[in-house]
Image 1 (cartoon, rainbow, N blue to C red):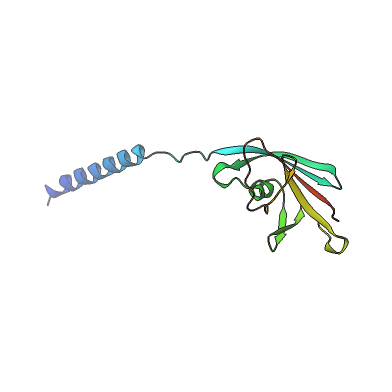
Image 2: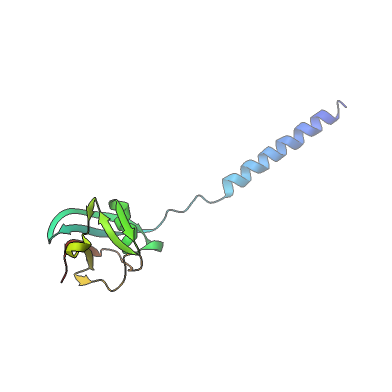
Length: 127
């Protein structure tokens, strides 16, 4: 029995050593690649907020950065409120947005953005 105790201790020591080597050789988590996108919020074409936001490159859509910068509410795929400013359907006041000065052709959850894009959301009456 006394001869078995050193053997067991040696085995535990080897297991601990192997576990330490295995943990040390595993790669660290890779940093998530991001892109910079500038967002500007306007009400009746008057700017009231502007931020440059880091958006994950693998999920580079308008809505991702918008949600990182402000509180956002949506219903049925449409943005209804940003930073506490809500649309008013009775008065036909809606949030619309442009990317690099061009009206978006897709919803904010589908519209892709690239590095250095400028996204402008404007809360204004529509015709």
